[in-house]
Length: 440
Ligand code: GDP
Image 1 (tube, rainbow, N blue to C red):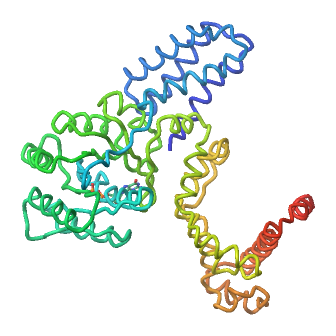
Image 2 (image 1 turned 90 degrees about the vertical axis):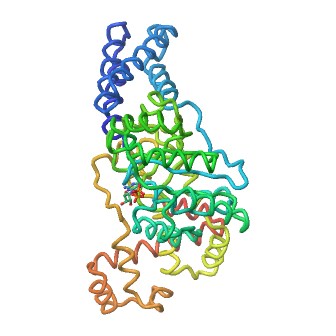
Image 3 (image 1 turned 60 degrees about the horizontal axis):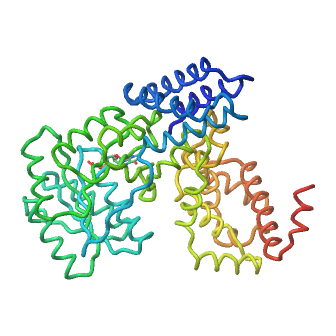
């Protein structure tokens, strides 16, 4: 995500940092590179030009040429302007209705059904809401089934009726069902449509008019770049929605849509989808995104993701096990699964300041824990509890069963041993011992 843009902006701003003296000429040169970086990221030329003009004006206004660290000041101005360009402050969802109604719109394949599920999951976990998903795509039975699969995955009820061919009626009945069954948010997934399809646009306008949603969201695929921005504009002209959801940002190496959609459509970007899993959803925070684009990481989001996966009950159980020296491979597996839920590794590394840049050319497997999981899964329940059982023949069996080598099994056993020791020390408040061990 944003790899190329980050690199190019870094180079452009470095140009200025490297100079002993800052002049109007090299400020102009730097900004030319910044503009080129934005255009290469698929930001519309006019937007890129306005952006660099504003930065220049601010830079000269603050007399960047005379300040002690003009390079740093320039980075700050670029960061602030990027934040502004992407919408300034983060915009939340209006959840004031009883129930609150959220209507999805967008092209087919943009990620509406996946996002509907992610949003239900997010509201349930983060906002302690009781959401109801509604299958409003009356044209594709498979779409209804897909929503049911998603609903089962996140344990959220799905309202559907394959016999009913009128999405307005389905939505009305779903809302009545929500009211009488204690659901406080109704998320209506709809069929994909093109802005030029008058019949289907009338249909969604009619759902909109009837159910009077608190939020109508336009879901669009980030990988389509400027097309995403154009479609967002065309839809907005007809539907006048409240916010945009940009999906598949994990596969978008350029990032142009995320940067420019707000300034073209004048509707806030509210959420970004960063993967196929139900947890791969982030509230869009312009300033955090600007930090990420400028290679400064996004520790706040990283901590939030960790908190989302943190289960207090489970943590207490783990602590007891560690204290009693009973932390086994099963527990280790559970921890790995929790980390995996936070998102893909490369994405997570990108949130650590400086790490994203360092890891740029390192190929991190999407499933970095595959080998470890396979090894643990090949162990017997007794072995998982008691690492002392491992002899040469058991190790050979496990390597064979997991498609790894004895060397890899040994490595995992060694790491596990070290980790257990360290956890025990932390528990005992043995900071000194830990320091000693680390200094060895
Ligand atoms: P719909 O037709 O608009 O309902 O789109 P779907 O929700 O069926 O999504 C279309 C495809 O995009 C599916 O294969 C999803 O798994 C995938 N998808 C949706 N959101 C994301 C995302 O944020 N990242 C990635 N990589 N894939 C996504």
